[in-house]
Image (cartoon, rainbow, N blue to C red; front, side, top):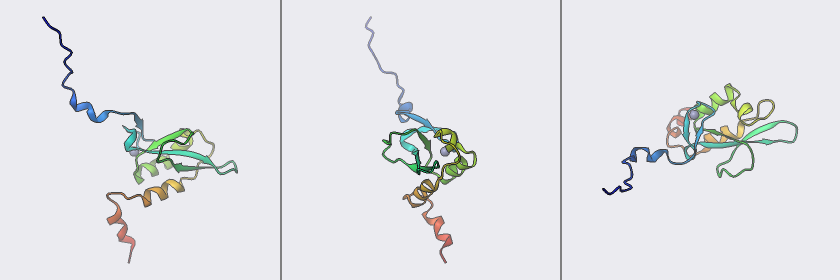
Length: 117
Ligand SMILES: [Zn+2]
């Protein structure tokens, strides 16, 4: 009797390869490559701002967020940045808001035309 090392037919799980993180907005677990990494930067006055770390290499404590305005707003509402980034007060999320609004999103560009006269 020969025992071969036959790999299990487990191809359904291929998409879950890679590190998984939790979105601080909707709390769903997601592949890190599909999430946006944000970090806190000090402005020198004891206040903090949230900035996007697209390369994922800033040597700071990061948090993960879907590149989705709804998740961003949810994170702001529940002060998730404060807890996830271990900062005091509410960090200024303007940079993330601008990043999301300027990102070449597949959807959303059509919706934005509603405000143009
Ligand atoms: Zn999310």
